[in-house]
Image (cartoon, rainbow, N blue to C red; front, top):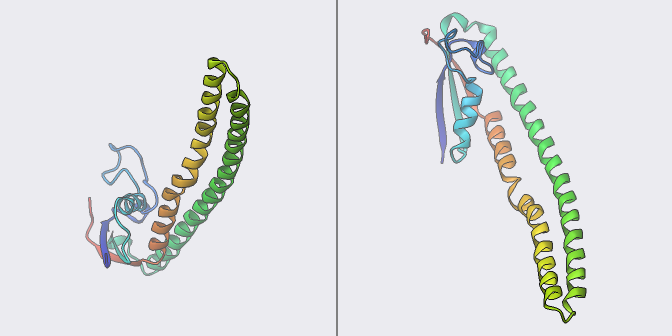
Length: 178
């Protein structure tokens, strides 16, 4: 996908990163900040190579300094989210290792106990040995699932945030939205 162009109309500058009032009866604008709407839209798509984002603000709020302030605020928010995602990924890597170590310990114990019980002549002991072997593999299931699948949403979120950090952000004066 080459360049993706998205346009958002904001009732005011405050609506970019927060909603002035969460009460739908008190404000006529969106109930979710525009930044969160944008994240949601990009989560549901393939990431574009380039993103052109146009924010339409009321003309009364488009002073000369607001454009620079919005660009700076945009970079600060995206960088902050990137750091947060990086910390989550590091935490996930640590918990993956812990879970894997515990799972492998249980697996090794179950395999050893199952091998010892498997040499018995009793049908009950052989059944117990087979159950222990199956239980040991089940104990490794969650760590393997975390290793294989749990990092994907975090890395996709990082890719989205990097795309937002490098996007072509345009602020356009517009007539009032609501």
